[in-house]
Every structure is written in structure tokens, then in C-alpha cells.
Image (cartoon, rainbow, N blue to C red; front, side, top):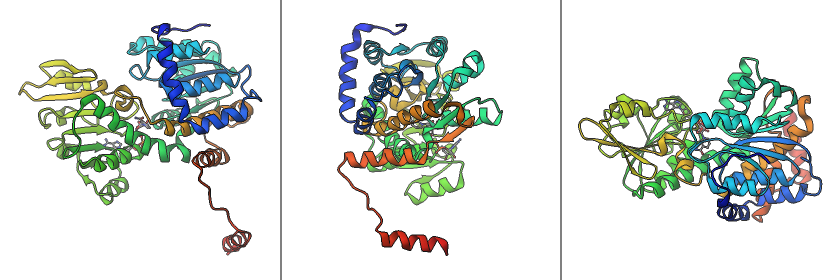
Length: 416
Ligand code: NAI
């Protein structure tokens, strides 16, 4: 089996992390139990590009246990955990990744992950699909379809769809109710603060926190910041989301207005250079910045480096840039996803839902293949609802069911 990882001897530590995660993944456990005997992915070549930590490893192992031949790349150099890569290789998954790999290695590993000609692609950020379309077009005929995990990946795929170059169906797992209502809001909301606190050891209560972007992720992080006792300022482009932020109890400002006030700055926009030189010039000494958007472009770290007279590693994952006037500005995790670069990513139970959707989507794509219309598609509603119901059942919770009288009443009402 082909693989390229840092150190296979790290496998026991990685396996222990995976076993711990697996205990809190009731939905994926239930799906595995349902499909194990059927082996629905038998003989299927599946390429995945995911953050290689314990929870994604459980998904990859499940693909393998349901019969697939699996190759995996890490979707971010800093989120790849070397012990997890080793544990995956140990369970028979071909992994091509290592922590802190260079950009050139990253791209090479994407190609290695695709080299065996997959029929199913599982993406997080659309890098695999983009690589197939740009560098490995010869693989296109064998690909039945793909699924995409995150908002920024979906944006890239929409651009490909608009250009008319997406040759197969890609299921937008991100847009399923079971995903964005929980993963982006509660998952990012908690894990960003987990990554922040364990990396900085700084008290959040009493601090002024600036949240850029009040989408699903920003809302969750703002909600948790308020609960931790922070004063929260939000910056937004969209008037409705901006007003929603105000109605939720946050203050609304432009980044230029917020820059001199913030102790902690976190970006959640999916946009570029949201915090840049003009803002660095206004910030307080020792302000801390982190990004939770998918790409490391939201904080302009090149401008920050250019402004600085001194650059040092203050502590693992905290870079301090000293400006000519002596102010020190801190950047977490090189401006990459702070919850993954500085922590373990989303809580396990949240990823259980997203990965149940990923598993069902991979099965769906494998079953229907090119019969599906090329382009982005939603997770089929019945899959989305079934995942949520499995989750509720795992918690011992039941849904209300309509009585016959209610069904008749609602049907009458609909006809009116
Ligand atoms: P979203 O589209 O719901 O929200 C983004 C918000 O940012 C929008 O309301 C938009 O108007 C606003 N925005 C855009 N440019 C801005 C600017 N210059 N200043 C202020 N606001 C601006 O997206 P969502 O789902 O909240 O995701 C945001 C980012 O987080 C994406 O890159 C996504 O891929 C990523 N993500 C990260 C996760 C993590 O684990 N860290 C998990 C899920 C998503």
C-alpha cells in the first residue's frame, strides 16, 4: 500500500484518539452497523481530502470497513495530525500528508491521493475536484461524483459550475440542515474558543472581541463569546445579517472603528484581507488575531510581516509581530483555521452528523453516479432528515408524529 506520512510508529497514539472519538459518534456507529454486512462500497476507489484528525479518521476508517479502497490527503498543513495519519495507514487507508507540509508538498499529495483514479471524491475545500479539473483531466471519466464539506468549497464549486466545467455531480454536504445548523454554528462556535483558550491561556471574560462576518460560524462564535463574558463587536457587509447581530445583542461597527477597541479579533467571512494594514495600524498593543474561515487569506499576514520590525514565535502557534512604534500584534496558527490549527477542530458529536451526511452522500453518489445531473446538488432531503432522526434516537428523544386528524387538517389547509 502506497502512503507518505511523517512517522508510522505514532500509530498507537492516533488509534487511541480515534477510539475515544468513535465512542461519541452514535450516528456513524448506527450507519456502520446498518451497512456493514452489505459492503456497499466494495471495490470502490475513494479519494478524500479532509482535516486529518481523529473524527475524520473515523469516517475514513468507516469507508474502508464498508469495502472502499481509500486514499486520503490532509486539507490543511496545520490541521494534519501525524499520529492520526499513522493510525490510518495502520488500518489500511493510504494517507498522503504530514503536519506543517509545504505548499508544494500539499499539492503533490493531492495528486498522489487521486493517482489511483477514484470513482468517488470526498472533498473539504474543493481542492481534489479543482486538482482533477486543472491537472488530472484524464481521471474525469472514472469519477461518478463527489461531496463537499465546507462553505468555501461550495463557493469554489459554484464558480466552476458557472464556468460550465464541473463534469459530475457534487453533493453540497455543507448546505444540509444537519450540517450548517449545527456544525458551522455550534461546532465552530465552541471549537474556536477551545483553540483560542488552550493556545493563549488568556481570559475571555471582560475582553472586547471583534467578530468579522455574522454568518453561521460567526454567529456561533459571537454567542459563545457573550456567554464567556466578552463584549462583542461584529463587522458585516450584509445589512440583514448586520441587523441580526445587533438584535442578538452585539455591537455593529466597521473594522476601522473596531480595530482600536478589540483585544481579540476573529474572522469568519470566507473573504479575503478582511483585516489588513490599515487596521493593524489602529490596533492596541498585544491584540490577538485568529481566522476561522477556510482559507488563510482573511488576515493579511504578508502586510503584517511587512509592517513589522520584529517577528518571533511567542509560544507554540502564536506569532508576535512588533511594529515600529513598539506595539505587538499576535497571530494565531499562521492565520489558518484557528480551531484546527490551534485545537482539535469541532466537537466530536458535531462531526458525527456531518460525517454521517458524508457517508450517505458517498453511498448516494456511488449508487447513482453519472445518472445525476452534473453540477452542485443538495443532500437529498430524506437523507438529511434520516441523519437527524438517528441523532435524536441516539439521545433517546422522540419526535411528535401527526395524528390522522392533524394530517387531514393540514391537507385541507394546504388546499385553501
Ligand atoms: P456564511 O456565508 O454564512 O457567512 C459569512 C459572512 O461573512 C456573511 O454574512 C458575509 O456577508 C460576511 N462577510 C463577507 N465579507 C466580509 C467582510 N469583508 N467583512 C465582514 N463580513 C463579511 O459562511 P459561514 O458558513 O459562516 O462560513 C464562513 C467561513 O468559515 C467559510 O470560509 C467556511 O468555509 C468556514 N468554515 C470554517 C469552519 C471551521 O471549522 N473553522 C467550519 C465551517 C465553515
